Structures are given as structure tokens and as C-alpha cells.
Image 1 (spheres, helix red, strand yellow):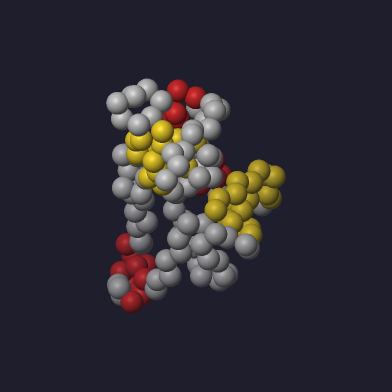
Image 2 (tube, rainbow, N blue to C red):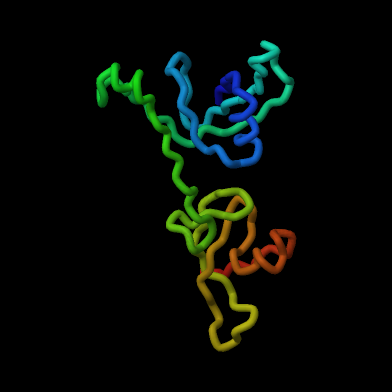
Length: 153
């Protein structure tokens, strides 16, 4: 894993810290790949000094592009470019990716011995292998309860 340090204006730093900014456009003058970390260092351009505050974010995806391939340079210079950020997908069982609310790891569908339904001895439920918590138990225990008993066979 590589860590890349980059200056960040205070207004952008604030959005990163508050969890409102989930994308970044940068000049491609460094190497980075998914799994690497970007260290945002707040920089006060009025004082021409770092503030000492930092935020670290793990890189999920990297998209390389050259805007001049899509638009004439004159248009880019006169109109600028937009970076569109889309709503982050839902997390949990209702999401298409079925990700854990605690660690964002992928949930697995597993079979468990039924604790509350004697007429149904084995039930299927989502389980996070990283957190070792069954989805059904998440709301009640906030991940602190006993480990679920996985069905044999």
C-alpha cells in the first residue's frame, strides 16, 4: 500500500472531514491505485502554510482520463469541467452490494440454526465474516452480542 500526500484547500478539507466529499480530481502527476491511501493535508493559501490537520482516505477506484480527448481545450478553459458526485449506494442487506454497516465488507448468505422458530430448524441469513456478526443480530446488539451459531452441513 502506498500513501500519497496532497495539499487541500480548507473548504475542500472541511467537506472531506465531514464526509460530504467522496471524489477528487487531480492532475495525474503521481502513481496511485485502489487500496492505496490519500493523505489530505489542509493548506492555508492565505498564510502559505499547512494547518497541521490531515485526513486519510482509502482509494476505492481510480479513473484516468484526458479531458482534451472529449472537449476542445478552448471550451475547457472557458467553461471549466464538472466533477459529479453521486449518492453513495445503500449499505446493508437492502443494498445491491450487500455490505456490512460496521466495516463495509461484503456480507455472505449462510445457514444458521433457528433460535426463535422451532418449526424452521435452519434459516438463511446474511453474515459478515470480518465482524463475525449475523445481520439479524446487528440492530439488537450493535455488533457486541454473542456470535451466531452457524448450522452444521
